[in-house]
Amino acid sequence: MRHLMSPMDLSVEELYDLLDLASDIEKNPDKYSTACKGKKLASAFYEPSTRTRLSFEAAMLNLGGSVIGFPSQDVSSVSKGESVADTIRILSCYADICAMRHPKEGAPMVAAQYSGIPVINAGDGGHQHPTQTLTDLLTIRSLKGRLDNLTIGLCGDLKFGRTVHSLINALIRYPNVSFVMISPPELKLPGYMIEILEKTGVKYTQTVKLDDAMDGLDILYMTRVQRERFFNEEDYVRMKDFYILNKEKLSLAPEDMLVMHPLPRVNEIAVDVDDDPRAVYFKQAQYGVYVRMALILTLLGIEVTSEVKENA
Ligand code: CP
Image 1 (cartoon, rainbow, N blue to C red):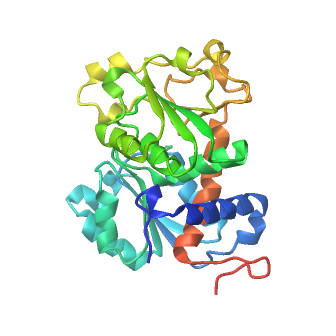
Image 2 (cartoon, rainbow, N blue to C red):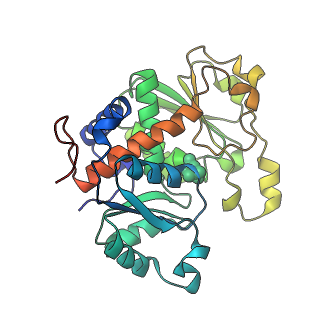
């Protein structure tokens, strides 16, 4: 039984297979429409979510399976004090696979230790968000045609933004990938992530100014300031509009640069950018369904050939 806690849990080869499967699902959705008939996804969300929860649920439904779960702590026995360990033991009795989001770093890892079913980390605190990374990698590979030889600008809250941490971990495994970290000093990439970059010899620069950084980027990955991880509202208010990518600023960027964002956005991308062909963040959310379908099939060990549509 395999779990997914971090994008590093998949080897580069496994990742290629998963992305190939996701691309095939995109092209041939009917082929997979009954692959998970009789299987159940437990969707255990201890923290709010729109994309991750609903794309996991859509993924299982698209595969012909069904979904149980809770969208917040308040509507489950977590509110009565039930532990993560006991909750996952119970979900293991009712479902075949679990997607768990939790505000505490490491909680899905604890769940995996007590689980009888595969557990997928759907985001744990400011730590990791591996399925967002799979989504990002599928988006980049589908729209850029490669995962190597890329210069990626990461902009916004690089301290608390778990999607950024997971994406860096995944991309440093590909040749000639470099990063431009664009953040206010207070929201710089944490030291443990800088250590990873230093240790692996990956090229990176750090800057505060978005305008100066855009030239030469293949991808600009915008992130929102993570209000829920701030200790006081005053600091959040001071930081929240530090970067606003609008049409005027985007005119400084290369014509073939992709603008990505894990969403939700707040103010960091103005709506006048949405119609620009470089803005791919809504498409990115769609890729999230295909890659989560591929992940569910992979972790459940279900293979779909063109002849066999149903799992035995
Ligand atoms: N990208 C992402 O994780 O969005 P949600 O918080 O809406 O799931």
